[in-house]
Image (cartoon, rainbow, N blue to C red; front, side, top):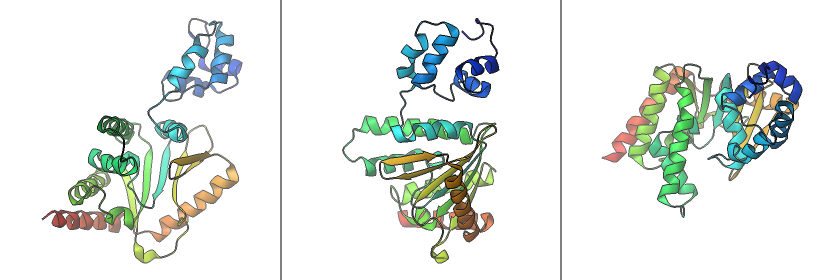
Length: 255
């Protein structure tokens, strides 16, 4: 419809008060237009409410409402830096590990619901393998490595998967050992994202809730906290050795 109207992405963006890059992301299905933008698109393109009617359909996602926007941003981020205090980050999980996490959090949900959530998580995790993937840097608390989520066999598979991603140069992983003691992110999980044409954002999450924050002062504090926890963690080389060792420990526990 944009091309039919003879408009470039930048020209349409000017008419609806957003960037041409954002228009391109909507067209590529990496961003979802909200209702107010859909209404402006209808006005700019003379489409008689077409985009407004479609909006409720395209904004429906398989993610929790509080996480939907963060999931979209991860798909277009240049870098993702994550501190994980208790769980392996979702983008790095194996299907078995993800299933154990979902089942523990939602013990009364049907098996089909759990299966659907696992499929969606694995689909989202494909950005790690995409040629245009973001640079992903994870700092895992040692508890995320030691806690037997799903049992010893699942943990062995999960840690072996992490080690393989590191060796394939897909991700950078550091482990924050118990011996580090108090650190700058004791209060919870944190995900930082940077972009080619937008300011960085921070995503913080707790039980059944999460918040995406773009306030520059808050993001700056989060960046400092992440830098401090990264400095306190083991080196990538020592962390890989710990992952291998922990994977073997879990493997021995199966016997």
